[in-house]
Every structure is written in C-alpha cells, then in structure tokens.
Amino acid sequence: MAISYPVAFPTINGKTIVQNLTMRLVQSAAMTESSTSMVQQVQDFGTARWEAEITIRPLDFQEAKVFQAFIASLRGVGKTFRFGDPQQNYTTNVPVCATTTAYNAGATIISIQNTSNYELVAGSHFSLNSRLHMLLETANDNATTSCEITPPIRTTTGIMSLDVTNPAGLWRLASNQVEWNVGVESLHSFTIACIEAI
Image (cartoon, rainbow, N blue to C red):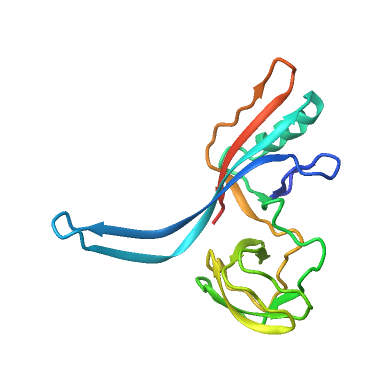
C-alpha cells in the first residue's frame, strides 16, 4: 500500500511523544545600516515561515521502530508531514470561529466570526486551509473581529472554519540526513529539524 502524504506526526497509544519543542517564526525582512550615521533602512517583504526542532522522549526499541519508519518515509526534504505544537489546542471552552470572507494569498488581517462564548486569545495557533497560523489579536466571543495573523495566508481561501482543537501545519525535514541515538539502556532518542513546507 502506498503512503499518502502529508503523513501524520506519530503518537504512541494516542499520546504525544514530543519531549521538547523549539518553534521559530522567521520573518522575511532585511536591514541595511550606514556605517557612519548608523541610520537603518528596513524592508519588510511581508511573509514569514515556521521552523522547529522537535525532540522526542526516549523510546524503547518497539516504539522507536515506528518513529524510524516515520522519518525515513519523509525521504529527507522530499515529503511532507502534519504537525503542530501539542500544547496549542483547546480541549475545553472551545471557541467556534470561521472567516467571514475569502482571502487572497498574502493576507495578514482576517475577519473572524466567533459564535461561541469563549475568546480565541492572542497567541493562539489555528489551522486554516491546512496551514498553521498564530493569532496576534484576540477574537472576542460572540462577535466578528478583524484580527492580524502570522504567517500570512498561503493560498487563496474561501470562508472556512478555524481549527483550534488540533491546529497543525504542513512541514518538511530541514535536511536530507536522518539519524537517531541509542543509549546504554537501549532507549532511542531523536531530534529533528523541520521547516514549514511552502
């Protein structure tokens, strides 16, 4: 049976195996500075992307085989997977939100209709059109709010629900090389670097 991409990030017994996560938002901006006057000129090119280093908890041999198969199936930078910060989800008091209009690629301000009694607070992650975004302003409960987001909308999108219960984006490995370590207790450890697949 052929693997269907993007693949889901593995869990074991329905639980996350992420031990440490470093997420980074890289902006596309450039700056030049005069060496004499120290005056700076900044050009913001209007986009950004996610980067991450994911460290997996120590896995026994049987658990490690599952994760080894996952990273090998990505074929280096060639294939994609879905992943999001395991702590960035709403499991109770879930805001129910949707965009109110269609957006073109590059949009950084969207109108969010929140039909629940719960705010979607600034800093929350959400998925829209299979892409991971962060809300920079709070979407008030029982209201329509114009909110800034990052990174910008990647592709033209219609009116859609925001996934806040399991927000995930599209990622690929940052390198063609995959590796793991085996310790003296026969526990396997993994750290992978990845970037948003654009």
